[in-house]
Amino acid sequence: MTVWLLAIDREYSSYEELKYRKVLGQGWSAIGDLSPLLPVKNEQKFREIITNFVSYVYNDWTDNRDPSRIILNLTKFSKGDYVICCEGESVRGIAKLTESVEYHYDNPKLYEYSQVVYPVTSWVDLNNNGNIKIKSMGPVGIQKYGGDLEYIASFFDPQA
Image (spheres, rainbow, N blue to C red):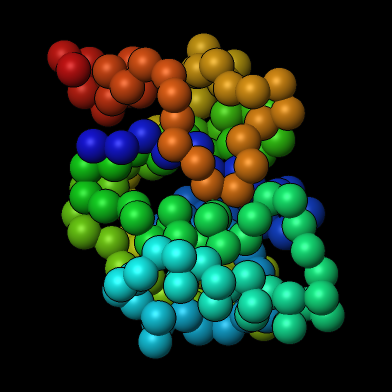
């Protein structure tokens, strides 16, 4: 079991949208369908390809958020993982991956967050951040959570 932090940029998507779609994802829709690169066989080569796609498609744009790391982490989501969904500094909810998920390139004409994994059917909405501590500016993209894993699991199973 891994607990992840997923940042959602309200300019392009929302926790409610991802929950409604039953997906977890990120943007960079213009780089297209990454299915031919999956499953990831070589993480370094995968990251190089994503970095080159982003640079080419977005006209040499670079970003310290490192889209290649974020997309790679998306491909690492697996059954039993928990994903803490944040909008900025606000923890909106947690998704539990109760079954194996697979990558899908969703319609970029409808969704900027088109790099997704699905199905995600188990969600817990949170108030007051659920007393989950995150960095002051919130997470960046997708990263592992360094806090209390049992506490996160307890939102789904009070006996955990």
